[in-house]
Structure formats: structure tokens, C-alpha cells
Image (cartoon, rainbow, N blue to C red; front, side, top):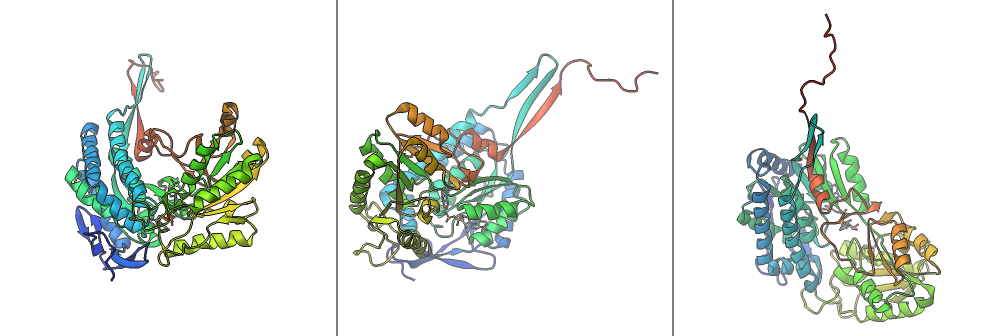
Amino acid sequence: MQMSNAPEQVPELITHYIGGEHVPSAGGQTFGVLDPATNTEYTRAAAGQAADVDRAVAAAAEAFRESGWADMRNRARAGVLNRIADGIEARGEQIARWESFDTGLPISQVEQQAKRAAENFRFFADLIVVQTEEAYRVADVQLNYVVRKPKGVAGLITPWNTPFMLESWKLAPALASGCTVVLKPAEWSPLSVSLLPEIFAEAGVPAGVFNIVHGIGEQAGDALVRHPDVPVLSFTGETATGQVIMRNAADGLKGLSMELGGKSPNIIFADADLDAALDSAIFGVFSLNGERCTAGSRVLVHRSIYADFVRQLGKRAARFKVGPPGDRSTELGALIHPEHFDKVIGHVAKAEAEGARLVTGGKRPDHLPDGNFLEPTVFADVTPEHTLFREEVFGPVVAVTPFDDEAEAVRLANDTKYGLAAYVWTNDLKRGLRVANQVEAGMLWLNSHNIRDLRTPFGGIKASGVGHEGGTRSIDFYTDQRIVHAWIADGGLPRFGGTS
Ligand code: NAD
């Protein structure tokens, strides 16, 4: 096994974490983990099977009943979450180094993700401290009040793009709500999460409250989805996987939160601040290696500025620094896995074959003969008939399409099965707000790149998601809201059979 490039202290086997113990798979199964910059196997991870998921769910169920986590005062639970955030911040550099090495994401961009992960814990700590429960009084007759209860063992299934941040995005609200959890991280990026057990234990999370089962989606993930003692599942990943999970969860009538794929439009009108729009278009599709669910991967540009915009976009993309993920000057690192690299390259070949115009990129940089490196790729004159207009690439490949007027821009923006994010650039406020109302997307940014406010709804519509998390919605998802009706008047009930 080649270990030369791996950061220090990387475990030789990434184990499950069940009931407060680091454990291998009961049957001893493992899978190889690759370094995306060289595609060499640098370690192995435990490949969870149904028996491992059973153990983890049993530990989480016991902790839900007996550890005191579910019944803890919100203020005390918030204290634990804040200590988790402290632990993440204290290890921020190591998390970033491990994550960058494991995923191929540029180190400078991954550092932001570790900070966001800590912020997720702090945010949900704050939120539960100010959590209210509604009460409804009907004169002096009836008092009705809501009791929130955590749902139980939450199953969390996460993807490989920005894994640490996305894991925290589910862990923080689930734990804040009083649930106990079993996390199934993505098999292509199991490394950075292995720093969490120590952080959680130091923060005072009782054993069994937080469990990790690594493994292949169709094995460990599937067992978690079907487990009868897991009433609620939060999934982030591909739309096709989401459909499979919804089918498999149906028998258990599980609560589902589905954050799925996207093919988000970025609409640029001629009156926009074009420098800012160009910066944002580049950031939106090439940051995080283009492996970003909310990437503005279809740039729709008004025809009067189209030629110039395409030229500038191509020029900037061609100047990108593609390089080793751990190098601080790298702007685009290595795609996660050779299988994914082949899929992305396949999209490039298909776009060319279907007649889209390759402006720049489309191939491996000459100076990087190994690993999953691809030049930032710009296609122009992409039409709705091209596959590139419709299918999610999830890599550094952008499709640019001209439009003639506002109605056509909206039509093109909505001509997709997805509805995750959208971006609109114009200095005409009325038009901006009009278009924002008409574009079918769960999240829209007007004259802004993708900056989130954690209080707002997060999620897609159409094929991009089912259910929204974000702010109090996440707490709603992980808790049952029960209503207690109290009759406080004397009498008032109808009498049957009372006359003699
Ligand atoms: P994926 O669907 O292949 O895998 C996601 C997770 O599901 C992994 O942990 C995988 O092991 C597991 N899985 C796979 N098959 C399963 C099954 N049958 N049962 C249970 N679990 C199963 O997705 P990916 O390739 O890891 O991630 C990329 C996708 O995620 C893209 O489509 C991207 O748009 C999407 N994504 C969406 C958001 C969002 O918030 N909407 C955020 C990030 C990524």
C-alpha cells in the first residue's frame, strides 16, 4: 500500500464507531480508499453489512432510551453542541488537510467548509435554546399546547462532496433535537469523519448517541434505510438514489428529507454588473471542483452581451490553476474518484458529439498525467436539446446558452426536471424580482453568489428534493409535534343517556 502522500496519523483501517467503540465490521469486510490525486489506495475502511447496522441502531436506540440525551434540558444539550464546535475549530487545520487529501478539493476552499461545520453546531445550539412550543387558548374553555419530542434514531446518509460540512449539516439539528443517530458517510470520502468520535466524546456526548457505519450504499446504506427501528431518514445525494431510498423506506412509513441533484441556471441580463456576474459564474461552477449541488452549471446570457461574456469566461477558465489539492495556490483540485472522472469526461465527449461548442478545457492538464484532474471546461451554444443542458455533470463543466428576452430566459431556466438553486443578475430591480418569482428553484440568489443564511429554508423542488431543512424546519423534521388538548371549563360535555 502506498502511504507516501497521506497526511500524518491517517488510520490504517477506518473503523465504524458504535456505542462509543471503534469497531471493524463483524464479518471483517473492508473496502479500499483512494487518494484522488494519484488514485492509489492509501487506506481501507470497514465495509458495514446489515449486522453492523443492526448493532449501531441497537446502540442508538438504547442511548435514546437510557443515556438521558433525549430528555436533557435544551440549554445543557446546546452546551454539548457548542463544545463540539470548539473541538472542530481546534482541529480545523487537520480536518481540512484530511478532507482535502481524501476528496481532492483544494485546501483553501476546504478550510471554509470546516468553519461552516463548526458554525452548524453553534447555530443549532442557539436555536434550541430559544425554541418555543406553541399554545392555543380558547377563551377560558380550552388550552391546547404542543409538546415536541425527538423522533428517535435518525438515519443520516451523506454524499462525498464537502463530506464533513454536509455530515455536520445533518448531525447538528438531529442531535440538537434530542435524536440519537447512525451516520452512513459516503464510501468515496470516509476519512475526515473519523475525527468526529474523539471530538464528540470530549464534548460530553454519551456513548451510543452518535454512531458511524461506513460502507457501500447498497449494503450499509440500504440496511439503514430498511431498519425498522429508524423512523426518520435524512439523505443527501443523487436524485436516482433518492428515488430508490423512498421506495425502500415506504414499508416503514419513514419520515424522509431528500436533498437531491441539480442543474441550476445562472441568468445574466445585459444591464447586470457584468464583472460581478462573471466572478460569480466562475465561482459557482468551478469552486469545490464543480462538485457542488447548487452549481450554476447552466449560464444563460442575454444575446447582446453573449459573445463577449463567453470569451471572458473562457479566458478566465483557461487561466485557472489546476493542481495538487494540498497546494495553497490550487484553484481546482482532483475529482473525487476515477469512476466519477470517467463520468464527467463522458459528458464532455457527448457534448462535443452533440454539437456544443467547446470554448476551453475538456481534457486533462498536460502537467498532471495521473489522478482525476480536468481543466475547467466551458461549452457555448448549448441548447435544450443537448444532454449537457439537462443532466447533472457534478464537475467543472459549464454550459452557456444565449437568450433574447426575459420570457425566454425564464423558459430556459425552467426547462429542466431539477429545481434546486438559481441565480439572477440584473440591475433592474423589478425585473429581478419578477424573474425570481417565476424561476422554479427552491433557493434563488439575486445579484449574489451562493451565500447561505442558516435560518432560511434549504432544499430543492421538482426532482431536486422532498422536504426542506434549514433553521427551525430542521428541528421540525427531527421532532414529533404532539398536541395536548386540555378542557379547563366546568362541564360543557354533551350528555347522552342522562335522562331517566
Ligand atoms: P449518491 O446518491 O451516489 O450517494 C449518496 C449516499 O447514498 C452515499 O453515502 C451512498 O453510499 C448512499 N447510497 C447509495 N445507494 C444507496 C441505497 N440504495 N440505499 C441507501 N444509501 C445509498 O450521491 P453522491 O454521488 O455521493 O453525491 C453526489 C450527488 O449528491 C449529486 O447529485 C449532488 O447534486 C447531490 N447533492 C445534493 C445536495 C443538496 O443539498 N441537494 C448537496 C450535496 C450533494
